[in-house]
Length: 282
Image 1 (cartoon, one colour):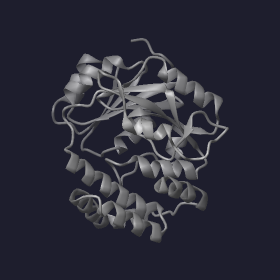
Image 2 (cartoon, helix red, strand yellow):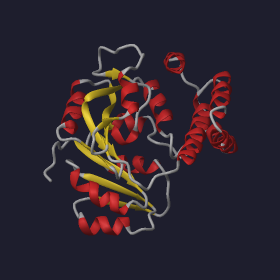
Image 3 (cartoon, helix red, strand yellow):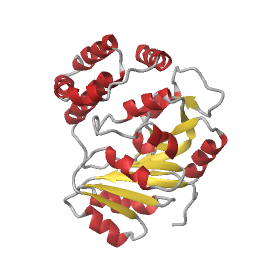
């Protein structure tokens, strides 16, 4: 398929989802970098054989969302659009997002509207983003954000790398929050734009809800320890742990990994913390 926009590279991180990859790769309308997270199902070989136009980076082990950072570093375009092995950008959306970056120098990230499945149901997260209570920024398009969904996000490569990309502490899942907070700290705007669309056909090979809750709670714990004032961090951990037994287990796991978070601790500036508190109350 001919590239829709030469300013964009699609970056995909995947592990053991060969069939999903082979089905979704032909839908991408930009050069693709696939970072294989130590797959054992032959994903990398299958993609290299069926899609020689795809740049495949083979990692010896699973590094979670850090694989996306590796992909962005390898890209040479000014903008990188993330996709999962079961998601892709709708026709025209790559160019619309790239145009927004070109027109708004303070824009660091665009999160697209997610349409789920063949029925194209609007994802509930997209509906929440559209109703964001954050104050509008006249220098950026769309609705202001302090978070995003990685598989439906395009980033300005320079902003993403300056903010550290996805880190080796949180890894996956729940990797988005720390990066969003650091982008905001760096003065970058983040926007939800409903006219930019990503299709997501969830793979049948996914984590169980309890495992997902565990992972999100672990990530929330580590992010709180890295970026929140101590009082806010304690409150956050108590709230997350109260959600379910899986959440409590995730918080406990995060606390076991606390030394790594403490080494990267850098509390948020007051203006970003105020925005996060506004979202928490909402």
